[in-house]
Image 1 (cartoon, each protein chain N blue to C red):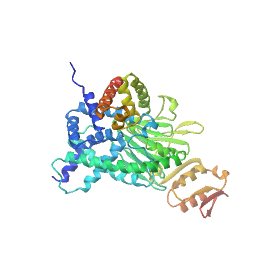
Image 2: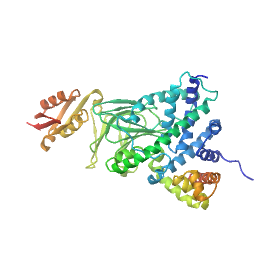
Image 3: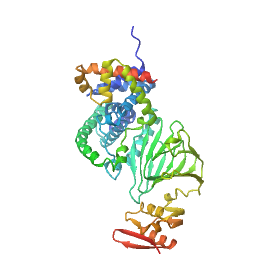
Image 4: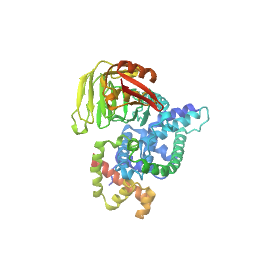
Amino acid sequence: MKTQPTDIEIAIDWLVRLQRPTVSPADWLAFDTWLSASEHHAQAYDAALTLDLQLACYEPGITQAAPLPSRPMDMSVGKKTWRWPVMGAAVASLLIGASLIWQTQVHIAPEAAYATAIGAHKTVILSDGSHIDLNTASRLTVDFDRTRRQVRMKDAEAYFDVAKDPRRPFIIEAGHSQIQVVGTAFDVKNRDGQLVVYVERGIVDVQPLPSMGSKHYRLRPGQALAYDQRTGLINVSLAENGEASSWRTGRLIYRDQPLSVVVADLNRQFDRPIRLGDAQTGKVRLSGVLIVDTQTAMVKRLSALLPLKSSDKGDGIVLTTR
Amino acid sequence: MKSQSLMQTYAEKRDNLVRTFAARLRSMSEAEDLIQDLFFKIERLENQEVGENPSALLFQMANHLMLDRLRSQKRAAARDAVWLQGNITSSQGQILADEPSAEAALAARQQLAALIQRVDELPPKVAQAFRLHKLEGRSQAETAEVMSISQSTVEKHISAALKRLIQARN
């Protein structure tokens, strides 16, 4: 005698049926009816779907044969980026509405890419209510599912104000480093082989190297961790409140930083490149606050603060020591 | 019925549509993207009369959008191939950027590799159908052709394989 099929078995039959070359509206209606009939059905189906999606990306070489080949993501002001911010808000509000009215259990947020051009800032509001302020010339991707909230950033700086959700940790991958939080506000800078994490509120776990296993640095408000990917040096210190995220109010704050770092920051603000006349110039150190306004004004102030002279070449500005 | 109700239906059915098209596209992010497009489409349908089965209509609209995409994707695939060959070193990061979504997390990957080993324990025909369709990305029809069996048999094999694998995992 055959036993009753379990939810998971029925779910798998549905999944396979949905992967037929053609699926009719009647199939969809029947599937939707089954899926909506019980929370257990939805859970069973999600488990089957998760397995299938895992299989779909089992090996990079194999996924190419999948129906939708992967393609390079256009991070520039291309067709993919323009509509996300608009859509994010629209869909987020729709989802909130949906959860209030229909008690929808699943909030599957889309994977989205956000980027800023040189000199631009952008605030992104995510579907969970978290905010990301993106500094100039930054790019990151956001990928939420029911178990976690994942952000990947390469060359970027961003301030995160993360909504609390103990069931879904908020994980940031910056190069090889991983930063994990539950709900907090902090700044992450991942530039030129340097990772700096500054915590404003809450607790942030940072794992600079994957080889650390499950070990991590636990940062509390006011603490900053700096990790140099080239030397491997990790330094945890107390930072001035708000200093790391001063860029959000249009200021750059430096404490004994080499000019090479300052110039790299300026080149993320303006299209016209600033170059260092020689290696020696790059080693001049700066402590102070630079207000971000026009490039000409900033170079002028910099030349007043430090023994520098600037010369205007056709394709950029060159700084040398006086 | 006004499009108000189409929008309401969308809100109600959105997650289930994503689930459906995630299975069809075998990608959560592609499915999300598709169902977002559907949102814009019905937004433009404001004040238009819709039939008495908005749920079926939504599914059909999503299906059309998917087919449109697959067609343009095929054309784009040739361009992508050239692009990938030309830029593979300088643009590694960009290629990685479109990695399949969260489900491909690192730990899951290892677990999955172990799971796939267990395909060997399946009956030979079931294992073959599973490998061709799920791991080598052939369609059900192609799998049927390669194995000289009917499509419905392929479907049964795939179902059986998935059931065994999901059991093995739990």
